[in-house]
Image (tube, rainbow, N blue to C red; front, side):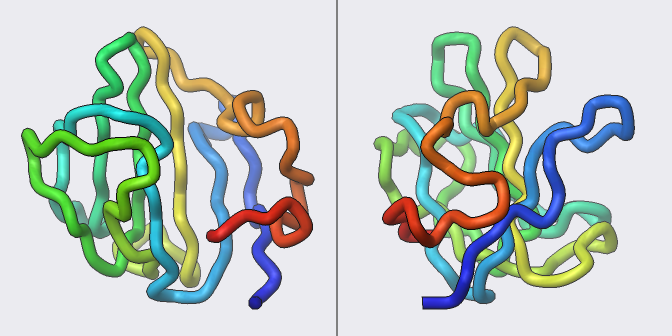
Length: 129
């Protein structure tokens, strides 16, 4: 298994509203919780992206995907494969997942919800990527 790491942390002062998780292109990306897909499309900056409304004030965002597997208005369960990690969009500097969590229109550091993850090495924590 390739070493998985966070190449850029949450930094609201520099408008980086999530974390960048590096892994091999094509690695499966899973929904973190049940919800409804409210966005699944392509933008020039962020490439293929997905936003899931978890229907409790929380939204999760997944960007730079190689391919999206879900469509707008589709209901997904936690653990559903929703995309493949990629390198799409002008703001991508290599294969990675840019991952954000928002609560009531405020961005939140995703690592708050995953305290078991070391900020530089995710492989030792049984993470599937």
